[in-house]
Length: 385
Image (cartoon, rainbow, N blue to C red; front, side, top):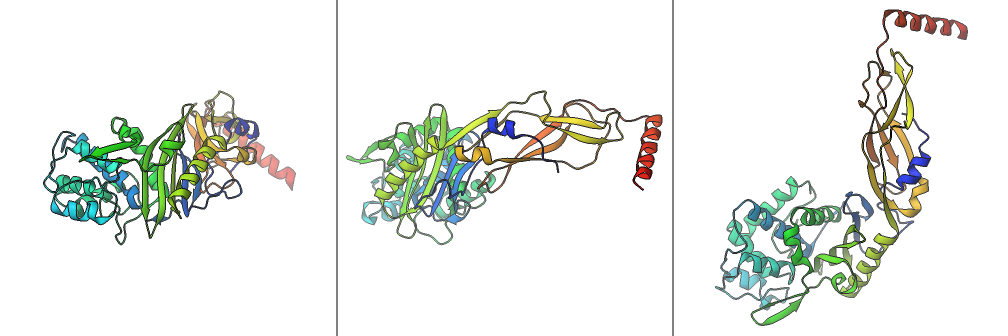
């Protein structure tokens, strides 16, 4: 393990990601994550990796499964699905929960139902989609969990499509943020639904519950959530000057607190954090010792551009190490990966790593060279005695 002189590079680099650093920012939310969309770095995390009850933020996964089915050709936006009595009974107006206001026997299209899920947070629309695609909501929930795990969202376990109370229905804030980013990146043609401010069905107009859509320029998604047991939550995304942030909050005491805290933290995400890039150059970060080579050291440099994000106050506190299995042995080819750059920042759960490659080739010593090297070692050992 080698500690190179990389302070100048790190000041340009400007940071690794910075979760869970209360000395920089904090929130009254029980769970919180701020993620840089492009890099995927978690900039801030408060219990972000812990499984939590997502309430209606579940519906991001519900929509994702439907998008996946559309891409697979199982269903289309124009397909019509029949509203069952169960969907009406467990997700309709009489429940007092969020609803699209569907009637038994209606045949809305998949696109209308998706908008009902996303814009209106309709529990009834979730059930109709689940039954239409998987036969039952239970089977659809299994499919949600399976797809989540395929996507690497290992904390996720879904028991229904709506997020209504159910034992074991959980996902972490960090995984919700990753899911939101996947939604934006993989299905941009459907992401537009999240920014719709209202929807009318059966003569009743309801507004989107996402407070950021009304208070912050650049906010364009995603989904609120609320249950008595979990408090008020929001998974949100906003873009400003070409940079996009994703945020998840949960466990706030009121809708007013959710509106105020989500705007405060999202604005802070764009002002308190920064994203910068170190471009690879031919200049070596450090010289590593080489055994059995025609030269005794070899330079190492970044293999590719390193783009990371972090809190502005953390930039100057970064430390860097070069980690490698030594001693390195010749022959070595130019461009061969020899080591790993490990950048550690205050408050980061895990460091950022980047491969380092050789700046030049090193040929193996011939017979005479080995003999001279061995003699030099013996003479050196004798001098020490």
